[in-house]
Amino acid sequence: MPRSPRISLAEVSRSSGGLLRRGDTAHDDPAHPPTLGDLTESLFFSPGDGRIWLQDQRMVLLHGAAFGHLRRELIDTLGADKARGLLTRAGYLSGTRDAQLVRGRWPDGDLLSVFLAGTRLHALEGVVKVTPLAVAFDKLRGTYEGEFRWDHSVEADEHLAAYGVGTECACWNQIGYAIGYVTTLFGQLVVFREVECRAAGAPACRVVGRHAAAWGDVREDLHHLHAQGFHSPAPRARAPAPHAASTQEGATAATQAPTGLVGASSAFHSACHQLARVARTQATVLFTGESGVGKEAFARQLHATGPRAQAPFVAVNCAAIPETLLESELFGVERGAFTGATRSRPGRFERADRGTLFLDEIATLSLTSQGKLLRALQEGEVERVGGTRTLRVDVRVVAATNVDLQQEVRAGRFREDLYYRLNVYPIHLPPLRDRRDDVPLLMDHFLQVESRRHARTPKGFSQRAMRAMMHYAFPGNIRELQNLIERGVISCDDGEAIDLPHMFRREQLPDDLLLSVGSDGNLQPESAPGRSLREAVADALEGGPGSLHRIEQRLLRETLQAHGGNVAAAARDLGLTRAQFAYRLRRGEQAPEPRRRGRKADAAS
Ligand SMILES: [Zn+2]
Image 1 (cartoon, rainbow, N blue to C red):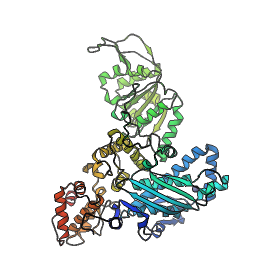
Image 2 (image 1 turned 90 degrees about the horizontal axis):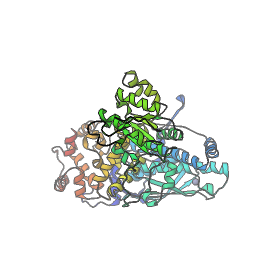
Image 3 (image 1 turned 180 degrees about the vertical axis):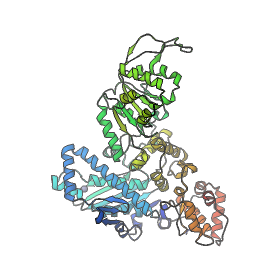
């Protein structure tokens, strides 16, 4: 182990387990795990019960010709653009799954080796033979550059068989895989492009990957990932304040923020597909799903892509308005109707005329309010409080709830007739934990949004932050993810990677997500599933006297390496002063002896 804070690249690249931050192919060692042999052992056939496994993922052995046929039918029925999007997203999903597999199975693997494991897996899966031409990355500076040669691409083969030599690159599914794999591991959006393709007459395919900011404009690439809402990153450029337009009256803070309609997972897609189908109509839509899944963002998208897009979108959070004011909020009030009503004003129904009225948390309405709402919906007219005129209103109603309305009806808390009025076209929005494949895309999206908003320039996410986010349960869903990233952007210094302590308060994370100790006494960012930090530490302690001392020393040194030898930054990371950190490190350089507990172990025990 190096004793001075100056650490050479070679030392970093091989000594620090999962904490490698920089690397290049000059340091690739095919014998370093996971090797092709290791990966091959992860693939096993279970013919007796009709399953093939790659570690814990079920796989399918598909005929190349069948893939080619499916691909051709997609292109012929949907057009090249849509087919390309479908194939890119399917590839992206495979890439994120393989990245999670490698990370879960080889948590100690250094970043270079786990990057290159993706090339080996892609070959193992029979898709393409990948030869890295040059890979260089620097986690701290947030740069990634990779160039690869692809031979025997199955997609190029099938494209050639169907269409002959053309002018366009055609390995769309494989590009999606590369983006999903590297982005998931790197913690920043890394976009791959095919620059030469056998389908366009080249002898082999050649692809280049770079972090999104280095490409400049990646809208076209993101279009195929269906990451709507993405903006091409423009560091330092301050976007206009994202205030809602005057016609968009937000009821919650979330409505003022750019939306998070970003994703490539099948769960997200299915919801988008339903949204696109119903948006064209005038039908009433009911969004269901947990708090924070983006119901209002979907409602706004529904409005923006529907026939009423030019008219107002008015949002009402039913839970945020006191019962006594609800009627005047919804239907308006005439001057003198009650004490304090000094002037007449229109209600939300009137303001949404010819547009869309979004009623959030509809289940919180009292039965009395439900009755008044139902009457307005049935008759298409409202009467201001204290008024005598009846006003005709033409609104499309979109409602949302995070509780089971049918259950509320059975319990007598929600009117059945209103339920049927609202539940014309229900769209269920999945919780974030059911669309984990979208987490890297959402992280990148909100990193751009929050960096612009706060005029900060963090460099992506640390590996352990990425790992934690991939495993975190997100009880508050997308809103919570956005909050975590906003906190990270604010807490992190410019040019640094956002790390766990920047985003999470300690009590939010299970202990074993912060640190864990292998049975060899080595610290690693994450324990094997099902083992708590306490159990892992107990195992390590059985290694004999002095093992806690070794744990502390390893923690100090790995943290130091992670910060490129910057003692002050490493100390801050561990909640120590610079002097405390240096003292502990110096003590470690003397003969190890059983010592009192270190800070992290204290906190965990
Ligand atoms: Zn190709």
